[in-house]
Length: 464
Image 1 (tube, one colour):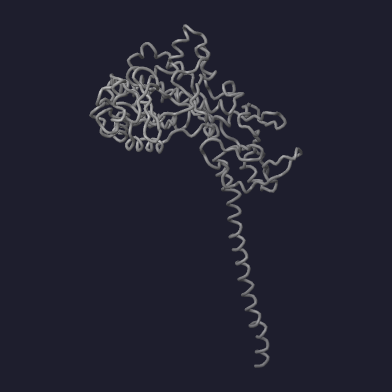
Image 2 (cartoon, rainbow, N blue to C red; image 1 turned 90 degrees about the vertical axis):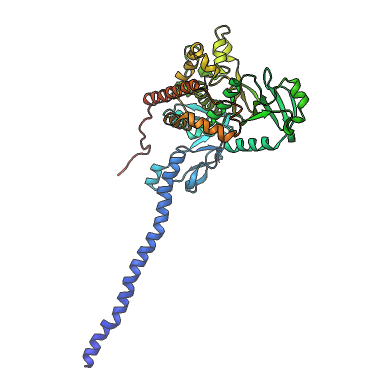
């Protein structure tokens, strides 16, 4: 018995040690997985997400270049970069050499931009020279197929959105008219001073056509997502009402009739003239295509203007506006230098935002004269093959939807109570608008088929 007991002791005393050792192995393995998953996620998944947001990062003297109204474009993988001194002792962000091979395939190379954004020039070269006074950037950073890239759109000032329009309407509903004086264009238009020193351009006409053209062009611009239209709203002039009574004598002097609809547009100060881009000045070569010949050697200011002009051409074609670029085109037959003159009813803010002013000829008066002026409208649209993605999506929506219903909805929601004072668009105008939307939609499809983007390939070399 003693011998059996002694022989069993090594087996019974060693077994707990084996059990503890078998538990330690899966615990360390599990801990390694738990630690490794977040690291792998940061390197692989976030790199992919960041590459999708901004294909090529833009730096200005080592600092993030974030023009326009958007926030930080560099995403969650910014921690994968570190500062390193180059030969000229200037600090620039570079890709860390410690990144794994897979991560180096996913993260795009950096582009160094000079300290002044206006010094940026476009080039078709793949490499970027850091020794020259002006750095260059590839054309495919400006356009992606027929679309402006996110980089290009960031160069455009913020403009006016739905929130700005709501603030303007709320202010008009609670303010009083203090003064009515000459200004804001021709005829019976007036510059109106409101409470708290705010000002408005007030459009008055005896004929409702031009009031309709102005306000419904504004509604259409909102449906297109344009931010280049100053906030506007309908109002009813009545010197007997408290809102207008302070300026009753000036209203009488302006020969305004009571109970007439007017358009109150937010007044913008310090505007300067805007000019037709060189791409649309030459009579036999009015063109903006997503090719190097049209997009080479541009500054960031040029790109910002062209992005906005692409919207302007679509907008003016849909409304058949006669009082802007078509005015320059028509007068070019007598004045060869007309296209180099300031564009009528187009102005630029100090920040670079183009304002599409005076749209009263749109949708009605312009439609009646299409037989005479249509070839001018077509000359601009036919030469355009670069668009904002949001504008194309809006045109697609208008093509699929009932534009009459959308405009009526805008009318009722934006200016409730004015339907009894201002008629809706006539049926003939609505039919013409639908045809023009269909034509723009077809033209964009033609541009897409002609300038289809190339198939993307991985730029880094593959190894086994």
